[in-house]
Image 1 (cartoon, rainbow, N blue to C red):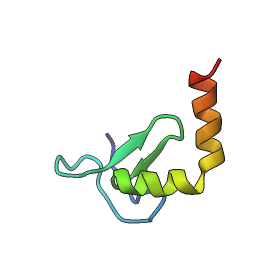
Image 2 (cartoon, rainbow, N blue to C red):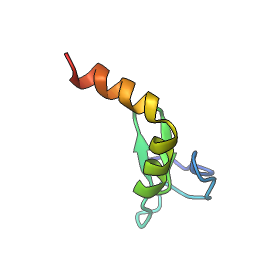
Image 3 (cartoon, helix red, strand yellow):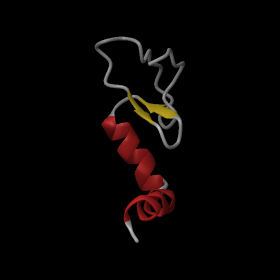
Image 4 (cartoon, rainbow, N blue to C red):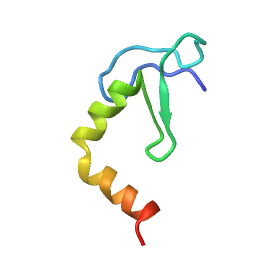
Length: 60
């Protein structure tokens, strides 16, 4: 991971290179989140985007 000035959803300052961080990276949106809960909050607010991605990847 590289240094990140803040998490995209909550704005919390973080350093993704810190081995003790709970930061997660979303390859699809190219965003860091300070932890899984921050990602889940973002996903709740972007439900349509998450469903569209899931359908694209998993539903035939």
